[in-house]
Image (cartoon, rainbow, N blue to C red; front, side, top):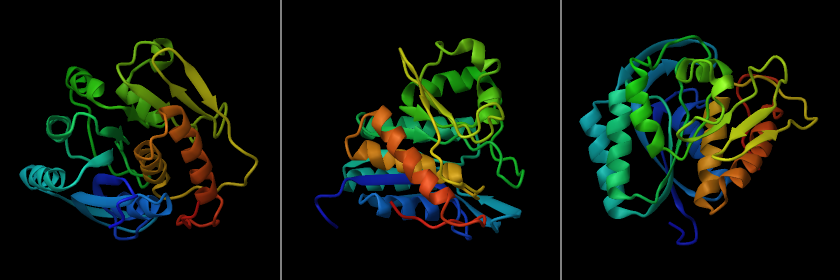
Length: 246
């Protein structure tokens, strides 16, 4: 492995179509010239347009995998995708913070697949509020943000973490992302590229951000550059599976 490349880890599900989950994340890591590792939280049976079945990985196996990697490598950034519960998410993040407090964490809060399969239910917001301060950035779309932060528009300055609110479902300003930082709200406007809906686009965006953070970019820079990457991906084909390139 190249000593010049930072290590980045994805903790997410395995999508055999390669459009989402750890396979898509690894493709994104490679294009960003970081060394990618992966831990599977679940095996799935799915295609780019249909979800059939999921088999969750035992939490203790996931935790042992995390511990093994951190004992052997200095991991700069982590992208977290699907998890079975907030309890599991908290255990995963707490383990990471114990092993390496400086590692950057990006959580893509996948609550439901594009094929409408439910992954994670928010049982209580008190549990969620314990987790958010440990995360560097979360990347919800508008539907997910409303579940995570009911009435979020009126609470723009009350978040306990940085948020990139994806604009793919914003009917009023399609493609305009909003980055909520501690003392600033930044709008990331779309380019004039013709983009097409893609299976797993949220996975690609969050793993691109994690890659950029591992390359010592600020959150602002990481999100701006990741937006360029995801637009290239969305415009690469007219199908639900895109091509990865920088």
